[in-house]
Every structure is written in C-alpha cells, then in structure tokens.
Image (cartoon, rainbow, N blue to C red; front, side, top):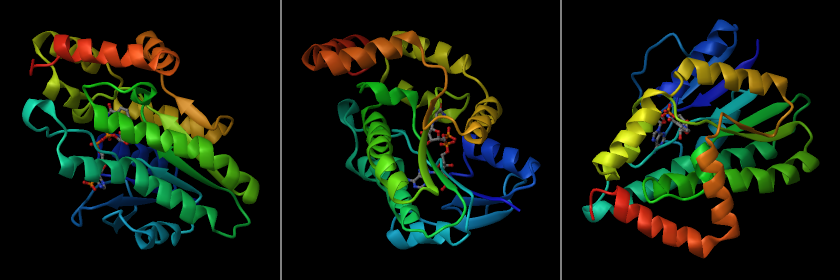
Length: 257
Ligand SMILES: NC(=O)c1ccc[n+]([C@@H]2O[C@H](COP(=O)([O-])OP(=O)(O)OC[C@H]3O[C@@H](n4cnc5c(N)ncnc54)[C@H](OP(=O)(O)O)[C@@H]3O)[C@@H](O)[C@H]2O)c1
C-alpha cells in the first residue's frame, strides 16, 4: 500500500487532497496541530506543531511515497494602519517557508531504494509582492526559491528524492478572502469577484494529484491571470518602478489611507 503524508489536512485543500488519496486506496497520514480531528479524508493522524527538525523526522518515519507540504497561513489579523503583526510574521514564515524547507532537507538525508516526491504547496501570488498580503507573498516566494535552488542539489545527490513545487491560484474558501482585511470597498469588490469565481478545492486537488502522477514538471502552476504575469515581469525588470506602483496601489486600494 502506498503512503502519502499531507500537512494542513484539516484545511480546505488538505481535506480535498486527502479524500482523493483515500479514494485511491492509499494510506493517508494527515498532519495537524489539532488532536481531535475526525473525518474520512485521512487514515492516520499525526498531531504535530510542525516546528523542529525532530517534528520533520516524524513525518519521514511513515516511509511515505509522497509528502505534500500543504499547511499554510495567510494574514487574518493585521495591526494598526494595516501593518503586519510580529506574531503573525513569525508563525506564517515558519509554516509557509522554514518548516517545509526543513522537511525537504531531512528527506534529502534518507537512504532509499524507491522514489519519494516532496511537494511544497506555494501560490501563484508569489510572483510579485503586494501590499495586500505581503507576509504571505514573502513566505511563498521564499519556499519557491528554496525548492528551485536546493531541489537540483538534492536530486543529483540522491536520485530518489525529488523536491517539487505546486502553485495553486485562488481556491473557493476562507483563505482566499483574507486580503480583503486591508482593502477598501472598491478593492473588496474586485477581490470578491475573483474569490466567487474561484474553483472548488476538489477541482484543484484533482489537478494537483494528476500533476503529481504525470511527474513531468518540477514546478506546476494552476491557471495564472495575465495581470499576475505582467506584475511579475515588472517586479523583476523594473523593481523601483514596481515599488512606486505599490505605493500608489496602497493609496488607491487600502481602507487605511
Ligand atoms: N485557498 C487559496 O485560495 C489558496 C491559493 C493559493 C495557495 N493556497 C495554498 O494552499 C494551501 C492550503 O490552503 P487552504 O485554503 O486549504 O488553507 P486553510 O483552509 O487555511 O488550511 C490550512 C491548514 O494549514 C494549517 N496551518 C495553518 N497555520 C499553521 C501554522 N502556523 N502551523 C502549522 N499548521 C498551520 C491548519 O491546520 P491545523 O490547524 O489543523 O494545524 C489549516 O487547516 C496553503 O499552503 C495555501 O497557502 C491556497
């Protein structure tokens, strides 16, 4: 029987991913900070704070075929004037970046005679920083950089360990709504249109599972709006101009100015 370990199993995408693998007859080890989780979308529960190297090693003890580092956090609380809160920055950077990076490195040490795919879940929002979800974007681009930079070293050192990265777009559910906590009425309406038209977690999970199975790509991306691509190029090619655009965007779109 094949085994998949999925972090953030209690969340919107985690449940959908877990359900897909349960239906396929896999052993699904769901990882959560909650110790009272029940549901049909996992077969085993690992309660873990997901912080230390020892926590990372516990995931590997299940001898999985796939690890899906799906747990993630967005800015649900913000400080005065929309400024990020220190506690949230610490917690978000850990779950969005340092924790998945630790798991990848511990997996890289394994001596295996069959493949292990370690898949980090990022976001299409990682291409350019925005004032409307800045800490989230920073953590997501950090893990994307890490996988694209460290993954090739790991693969050539240990051909059975493949670090791969998947970038979903907005998924219908609460996380996609978080940026509205900084937006004014006009910005709210733009975001609402995007969230209300977002695909369900089941649709996104199906695409991710198929992408994993196909095994052709190292980095997978759900449909990316054209505007995201433009911002990404501007950020890379004209960083000072991009910053000025953000200053303007914040003045026009935030509820604090
Ligand atoms: N939803 C979207 O629109 C969207 C778009 C692009 C990318 N993504 C990415 O897709 C992944 C899943 O998103 P989702 O919508 O399913 O999010 P979600 O419903 O908020 O679920 C995320 C899960 O991660 C766990 N988690 C949150 N903060 C944590 C922390 N500090 N430490 C450890 N675990 C923590 C929580 O599980 P426990 O409380 O049980 O531990 C939570 O249920 C995330 O990485 C997200 O960034 C989502």
